[in-house]
Length: 204
Image (cartoon, rainbow, N blue to C red; front, side, top):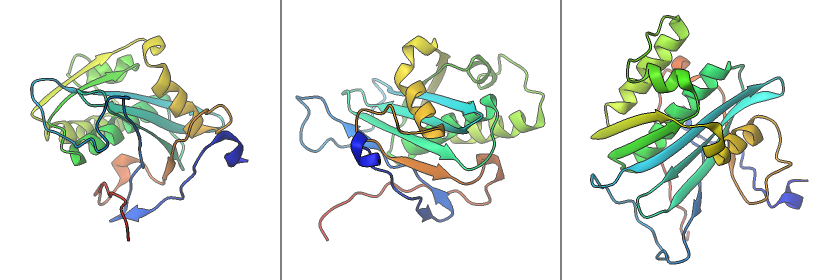
């Protein structure tokens, strides 16, 4: 039972053809009740992403952290087969979309994929057609940011995003806190129209 693990599963909702992952806000103890999204070029937001692909399914986990320490944590479950490299790119693309919709202008991305970390800045030559499409999609999103950087981090330093990606791709059994997991029906490179919208819940 999901209730035994304090987990909320929200069915997918379509917004102009795009399924947007809801996020869980983790506020530091000294944070104000309402943490607003503030554009800053002095200190970057940090985005940790990790994609997971296994026999039981595929998914990704993303953690977006503001300079003040506010965390937005969420996962996506894929309704399609994805290789490890595709899952890593899907995680990057989803994270960049969320960051852009939140008004972030300066972001540093940490990934555990050596391939993604080197293909994005052009250190590695991209030859496979699928990877070329993913790279083009990622660069299109990156162009919307004033400042962007990416680096590879050991999986040991990206444990939380790694855990989220595995939870999203398989089961909820080991999750100890509330988190929303959304479903993505098709690959980012197959989309005809993509529009992500962050909606705030309030009194009706």
